[in-house]
Image (cartoon, rainbow, N blue to C red; front, top):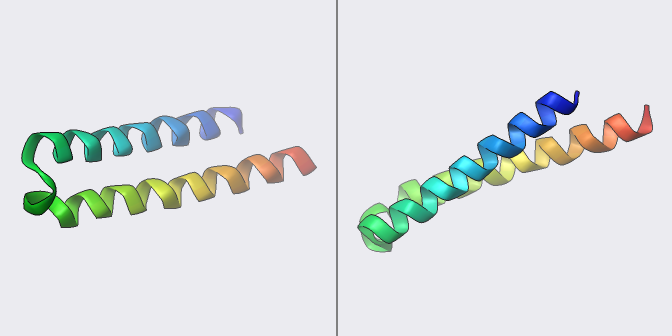
Length: 59
């Protein structure tokens, strides 16, 4: 279970890093939709990650 949590955390970091890189490289107006999609996907994965961590602590 710990490998899954760490992998999801790494994917979240990569997605946020990609969003920041796009924002700095091409600007907000050019890539607004893609940046928002990356951040929303990262937030959803982090929510799954937190849920997995809480379930692992219970059982």
